[in-house]
Image (cartoon, rainbow, N blue to C red; front, side, top):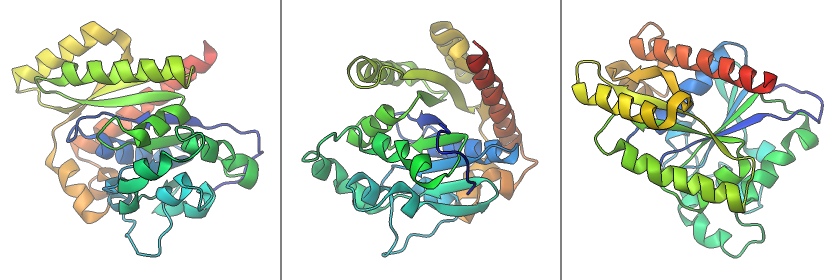
Length: 271
């Protein structure tokens, strides 16, 4: 954790897709690791009750652990739940199964859709913690936890599996993002879409890639994340694939993805 002036504002990205099994959490973990590897200060906020981002970084669940649940219901400040991942420049605010009931509990709170935004807004002001990127790992549904992430985020980053119904699911997500932009968070945009589980030997993967690029144009990243057994194995060892096997094609893809993201973000700032 690194101190900086209190006016510092991180770039907050919601990593989201309401479909499960698209590589969302895998992308959050490995993109965060790759960004940290090139010198960025990164915080991953785990908003999924399954807690796969937390365990994928080797953070064990304990009964006494404070989590993002306690932040959302006001029992803890965000900096009280942040833990070091063991990876230089990468921290994590872990989740817990308590998040399963958070949607019901939050319904009685004021500013129920802005609980996370409020927590992030005071993070650097209260503590001086400096993060270049905050990645919000959303649950695989468009529920109140995801809406909290969209209200806190500058932009949405979408991992999209190369499968037949990919565009159908993406359409629903884009409509939700637009509704949040109009009604709750006017700065929210789609930062980009990354194609995951890409198999060059499968003509369907290529067709999906062409279809998505024809709809979203340069919002789709040039980098694609291939199907790779090492990427699938890494979470069971509590490690990002970049630590589990830095030389595999999955690791190299996430390194390229981080580089492409940084270039895009720099171009946005210049524009």
